Image (cartoon, rainbow, N blue to C red; front, side, top):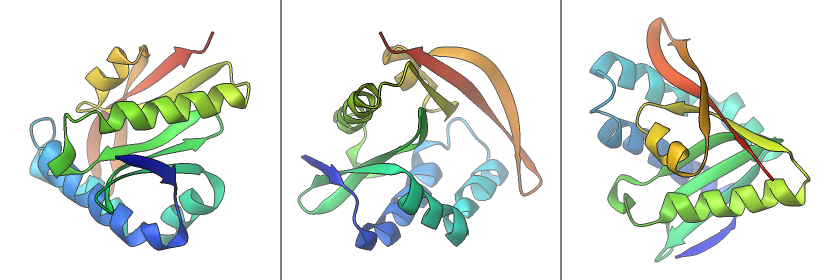
Length: 153
């Protein structure tokens, strides 16, 4: 596995990974309507272009395939997704380690993230604490997620 910064050609594969991960990995935590609403975000071109233009994006690659990606927007982890075929192989941990180091390099005092039910255990294991449970409405469908924070010493 290698970790690198994104390039402009990564976006289509990132969006596909986003959709497939939500569809397959998150199905135990969200119902079909919630999954459909959530993955519809892949079609929000303006949002994805802003991610690429304004955030730090790290890509994990295995055999020239994107296995995962993580984005940092100031002190906020905006996106952290691992391909459905690369779950439980340390991809998220490695990506998170890069992001946390970058935040430390930027002299950030803490990191925040709004995380899914599926991702909550990962973030707790990485030292994050839940600040509050949130209900987010996506295209008329309510989804539960969690505002989490980690103090960086």
